[in-house]
Length: 187
Image (cartoon, rainbow, N blue to C red; front, side, top):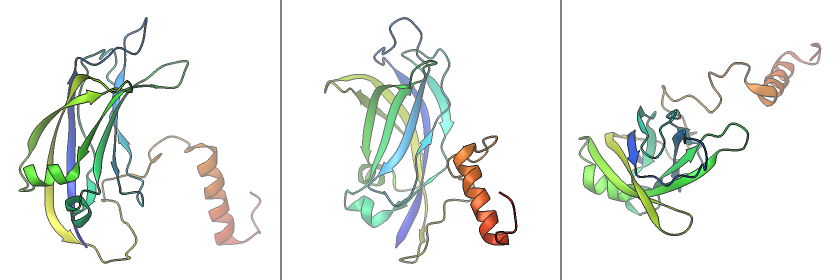
């Protein structure tokens, strides 16, 4: 199947709805490709501390791998969710933007970088604010049908690089070591 890398850089947002009553928002963006459920492709920007309603990120995500046929068929959407960090409670949704990858291919499939602006959608059904990002597509390459998915070399799996890795990854690693060396280890 024909594939291309999609390079996305989150630039900024302006005029966002305030979702924290008494404190300044610390917004960040979570990006993913919907319609590409076989791959864990969720990525996020760092939070812009005290970014409020007009945060700036200038953050380049590791590239997404796009199945060109699925994109041209309208099956892939670049989902950009804006959230704000909170200290004592779970992070809160600010709004989102859904961008059909087909539209990105049509407008910028030539490999040149393009800047885009989209209205931020709200749960209420309205819009408030603008999200700005740039993107470009890399050269085409072919992936064998049924070949196992290989993320780009510079794309780390979720949780990579975190100290400790958490209880679950420790358990998985412990089971993997036990499976490899047999039951002679005390784990």
